[in-house]
Image 1: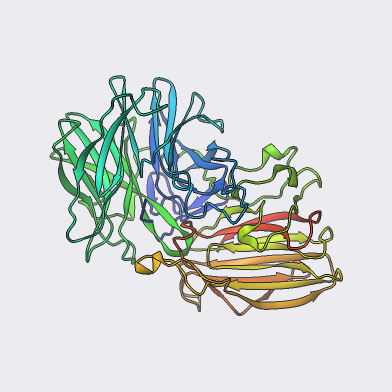
Image 2: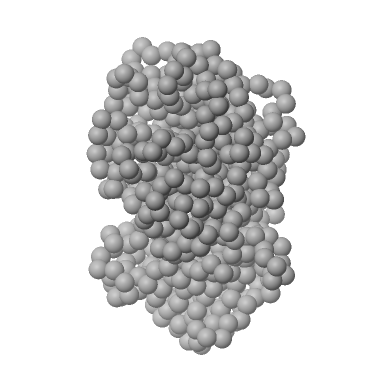
Length: 542
């Protein structure tokens, strides 16, 4: 599970309108936000895509489109993988950087199937449903991990293909409930070892025409992340290979790779592949597919493209992030663009207790935001955006902290803290761990120490305060900062804003393995019972 997408003139504009999309013309990226490890299928005229969200709950978002361009989250495969210490952030456990990875999505005989590994569990989960628009599917558990797996349904048989370096295959029971009794594991592909930083992984298997195809990502030394196809007329091989997508894209050295191909109802072929794009996360691109001598060649003769035409009528809306006024009739109506950091305590949050507000109640005391329950998150979006909230701190108790956070391993928070005597302060924090994990050898080093630096402490003599984080992922000409910077600001009246001069240098680190999100948090370091109210969440691009 590796890679990320890129740059763009094309942005999701809230929940409906998008700049850069006109008729059948399209400008990459597909969306300038964190949607990695995609797999997608077509059922009639409808397209469904799944993505990795790891430790966030609910997980494995299902997105729907009619035109390959506009995507809307319509459901989640599961509510929470496990009700254990890892997902409840107890006893020093967490699922950061782990959880649900690289889901394989299929539709067979009226049933939808989703298979993925949960790294913290060392298990593979297969979920199934008859109605993909509804969340929380029926599941089976296989007590072994199939890394970056892909399903192939073939003449009443179900095979799973998976691996890293060595791509393997084994047969499952037809319903995916277990490995088939007596099934033998076989290596289909033993990818080259010399001259590669990353050997084959992220497999997607298809049976198209006379050939079986396995698409995977690899990374040649001195090159970029690359998509390679393997093919054979026999499922069990032997397989031959060909590079089908390789090259830098939109000014970044990261290659575009890992994803799926699909045929439209009109007979055209497309692929969604993603690219590492720094702090915003791993961003998907849409690439054309041309069949040449029986090979699916992506982009423009293997070179990733930025602009293309889509042979489908524009339809639907974009809704993978959105502003929210928290005006709901019941908690279950909470917009699907939201996900909790790990498993929430459902008794301690509400969007109905105070009409038009999100209330986060504090449970047992914790050390910091990384161990806090009921932190509500949403994707940020590039190239630049702001996230703003109005916080009411009147329900907070001594030891409580509440506000908003640019959430990753390197984070910044701005919010309210309550002292022992009940006095309130407006506090800004930048956190950069002394040792940070990123790409390369340093990725093996775990962060040490807290690394927090207080950049603001201001007495607060009122309960309501407006808070904002400005994200600049790709600077424009009028920006004076470099890429991947987050700036905090506050207002005491919602009109006049004060921006803190200390910017956070955002980094996509492997200990969390997700792009930056804006997190709404409330937790206690002393006692349970306090709460914070949020009147709205407004995210805008600029």
